[in-house]
Length: 206
Image (cartoon, one colour):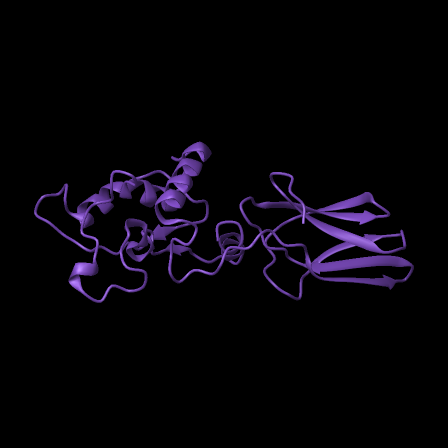
């Protein structure tokens, strides 16, 4: 999401509204799926293992997220027990207030509490992909290579490497691709069979 969908939305000038910050209760062992009875609803303010304010702060400090809609399961006269009040307090956070180290710490907590599938409605996790729909053609003595965007995984995509005979002959910086009709392009006077690799910010290749 944060490396694929959000950058494209921002490139198109769209606002991004976060939802399901608690995974419809899945983060707190609520039933997978929509709760249908009162006894299925989690009524506490977070938990000792996973404070709710950290999840709210995580989303609101994610680059590109503009605002957040948060469901609540319980309101209370005691502000310490009232999800609405505590959610409001947690939302008073600056966009740049969370460090990368803190983000990784929260991600590790959610993995321990809820595993990788924190939302019952999410797609299965996939690894970073190679460039898609790779095409090569000769145009007026120039080799033109085009491809559609790859999908990022844990790390954002940095660039694409163009390889000929096991040698890197060029690089193209990654950017959000907003139209299928505007693929990534690399042109060279070299000829042969080219390969294009996706490279992420951690140096992984696909």
